[in-house]
Image 1: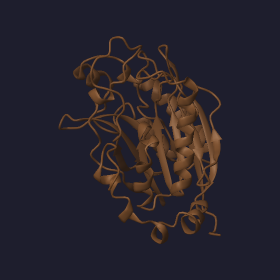
Image 2 (image 1 turned 30 degrees about the horizontal axis):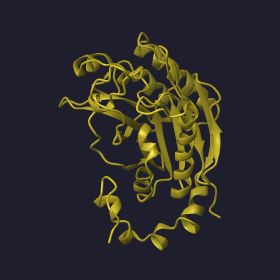
Image 3 (image 1 turned 180 degrees about the vertical axis):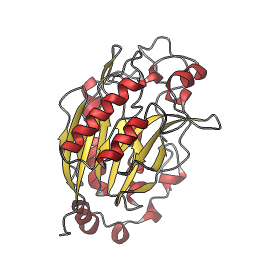
Length: 311
């Protein structure tokens, strides 16, 4: 067995952020959780998707209004600098998601990785955008990620976060096995992500309990099949009456949930994650170099949708 490589790993779940809440109020909450995580031994803290605002894609509005109210033009900025400063003071790295407006005017659902020195060492832009771009007036709320965001253009990449090979994804990405496999093929040891998942599926009558069970199954199966730790942070609860699931979790390479949130409020969960646990699975179970046969997987990249059986 490989020698132990412990990492203090925390997920900082956010309760609701309402339309009336300011960036300053949210950042204060993030800093409080960062301090709690540090007090419990955390060296890396995972915050949710779109962690600075309410989940605004639920509202029909113009792109211009969304940009004015909910997008960040740079990171850090005046509102978020205190979070970066405190992280540097504490010596804790973090992942955080936000709505990004680029200098060219492009809009992305983005996350960044910040090291323990308070420096941005990686950026990811969400690839698997769910929802729709048209107005659905009969729906109880909208899910307009395809209206407000472009498909991410940075790919799935692995970054050195204070010596830990770390991959990022966001929300719906976690349900797609390709996400984790591409990261694992770059020797990822840890995958971090944030999510905002409505309890109600506006597209079909999906039982509410499945929203949580399929979320957990996705984390567990992909952690195991790619020999990675997975840390997933929710923004959850009722935002101005619109409910989102919680169940923030940390999953080991064994596929086991080793920590899970109990509330739908601001809550920190923390584990001492032994990165060497993944080494054992990469060597003895999912040894890619020894057992993969990519010549038989061509349909994965040749087809987008399902087609006829191969002759």
